[in-house]
Structures are given as structure tokens and as C-alpha cells.
Image 1 (cartoon, rainbow, N blue to C red):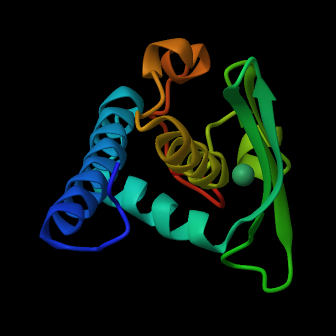
Image 2 (tube, rainbow, N blue to C red; image 1 turned 180 degrees about the vertical axis):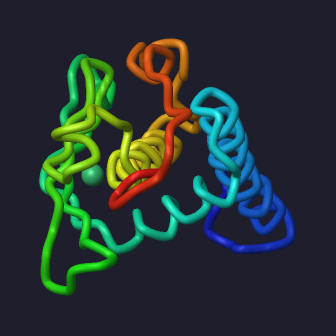
Length: 149
Ligand SMILES: [Zn+2]
């Protein structure tokens, strides 16, 4: 393998690889928007919120990322963080929307997007939404309030 020169060929490879990463993230975002019946803008907000998140733990089992734990800053209360766990087994957030109303809140959505981004980097593929059972078990169609989508 000759890879020591960053010539035209490897530049093309780089473009192709990064394009694939972008496509996997985009397709996953669209699927989540459809499954949860939320507008793509909300998913985009969650992606932005994910950038402010701090990863606490990445759970790996049999070389597969099965979940992510992170803290996400509150958007309305400066200095406050919500602690979020998202994985195949379920989701948890200590904000009101998730704790008392059992909703998939924007913090959970943010860490879900983060989990997917990590997965795309590690495997080249987006998470399989069919394997995330809890996504399909929730009815999100209610009025919005603090923390909710
Ligand atoms: Zn929350």
C-alpha cells in the first residue's frame, strides 16, 4: 500500500469517506424525525445541543457501542446540567419532561444523535433504528413544555 503521499487519489478517498459519514448522520436524523413524528428542525436543534454535551461514558459490548452517558447543559438555566443515558436498553434523563412525564426529551434526543455520530465514526454505519425499541413505543404527540421536543 502506497499512502505516504497525499496526492489526488487519497484526496478523493478523503472526500468519499467524509461524504459517507455525513450521509449516515443525515439519514439517521431523517429517520428519527419520522419515527418520533417531530420536525427535522427539532432534530437539528438536538444535533447542536449534542455539541455542547460532555461524554461521561461509552458502553461497549462485543465491539459494539451499546450506549452513551453524557451531561447536557440546560438551555434555560445557566450552569445546570442534565444527566442522560441512552442505549439499546432504554433512555433516561433527569429533567422534568423525562422524569415526570416519561417523554423523550431534547436532551435524550441530543445524546441519541451523539451516540449515532460516535457509531458512524467507529463502524461507518448509522445505528439500526429497529434495534432501538423504545423509539417505537412512545407517543410524542402532546403539547410542548420545558425540556420537551
Ligand atoms: Zn431531558
